[in-house]
Image 1 (tube, helix red, strand yellow):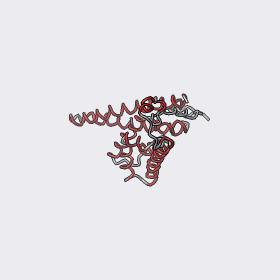
Image 2: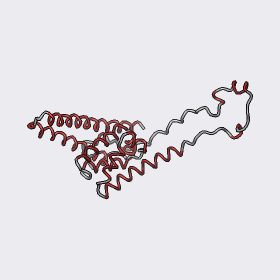
Image 3: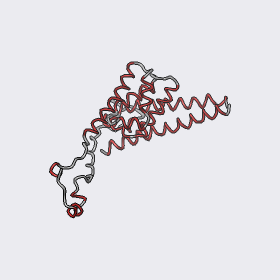
Image 4: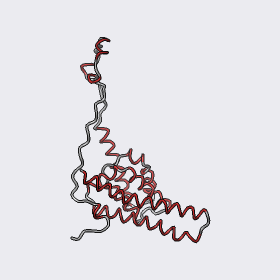
Length: 219
């Protein structure tokens, strides 16, 4: 539904803004280190840490306030998956396999029911997950395995639902005259690809995450 799409878009806008600031601040740290600007490093590094903390808070809010359908569809946003890859790769480099940011990324991804093995490969996320799994605790290893297994199952379902096209049995072994074969239109050709049936709309969302990212509603 439009409400789910709007919620996903607004969540991504928040995450993307944090991601861009984090990348800019990380670049500033690298440049300061290369230029030996030691005095600037503490402030610059604190900004990088602040952006990671903001991302953690945003993802925690998504888990707490978003409708399950929104999280389920979130895996369709490829830039979001690449964001997860970049932050997990960063945490791996820092040997932070089970920290709060890594933990919330694992949990959010485990709720994304639209992931496929192809998406994980394309966004390089599968590499980061495999690397983190080698060192993560048992709880987080289970989350990572759930993510990978779920993606594999979705890929298998997708392949099973699109069987290869075959020529109708009655046409097998029958040679048509050249004049008749030439006169057949594309619509009559059994091997002509048919347009794909549009996907059914996603379920209606019951609650909009976007309005609750910042604060929890009163009960």
